[in-house]
Length: 468
Image (cartoon, rainbow, N blue to C red; front, side, top):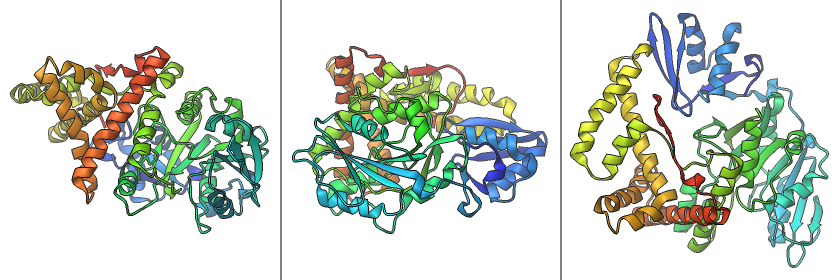
């Protein structure tokens, strides 16, 4: 994500950061997925500078590269010290279909300062009228967001293109493009995405979307990579180097949903660094009814099989260690005593496998316990978002699988309830369960249409790992 520490003033360590000091050197646990790093005593000065925001020594380059690549630290650019593209080097592309002319006009006004704004009327009826300050491109038939963006992309002449959904609402005081541009001082960065936060509102649905929107990837910065905490970023707000998106053939127009995920994964697979910058926010309108919200989740689920065909195993519903998964299965099936017995060898195995790290036994136990809890939560989530139809049918003949489905339905929502503490707990649980069911139904519908069920298969590992 960065080509050298000399261009970046400071770094923030990831929330997963943990460091243990010993005479033989320092051990760091951080990143997504969680990784262990071992450093010689000579690197201690660098690690302490990272934790305290101090000045980095000249010798820090190799250490910084390792940690940034793993998502263990995140660069914080100092705009005044960087050479970045100017706002006039940016073209904003907004696909629109039957959007309110007043909302589009307000959005264009809020984009004052960028080089150019292009609105693509994707077969709206009636056609969208011209809006002052924007170039309007008309498509006679609706081809979907991917086709609309590609149509505009063919006319873009600026260095940077900023894809923005028509549902985004910016005030005239917000200038997210200006802050995002500073990240392009590094030639290795090809894509930068802000946080797409849901607009606040008084209704229960709006408050739920504010907490659980699939477009909102959280408040922690991250490198974007498959199988990590932030495995993609949505095209609702996405800034890319124009040459790169053209070189990699733009958006796949055969994908009605998941076209943004596909583009991001293609960039990553070709060695392009992509980063998520949640300190910059672009508010996004929420769905107005429960029916529309559930349809959105269903539609997102239908893209899993097609994404798996293009990126094998990247859309897998679960990645887990075999030993941790076995123990988590007994927990969800309600075999309490059997699970307690399995916990002991599981903990011992991970304590022994981590003995070469010089980490104290108590800390190794904590890491193993964290891995087990995380695996249990992620397994329950996968059951509800991918496998619930199978478990529902099997529960007719197996009480234990019925117990497993019931636990899986409630474990992730209860964890979310404890973390976010919404003021409407019962309705939060109901909506969380319903949206998981809707997404899972979409996954199966998409798999049946694509005649491929590989997107439903888990990725099981046998090497030591700590799930996050």
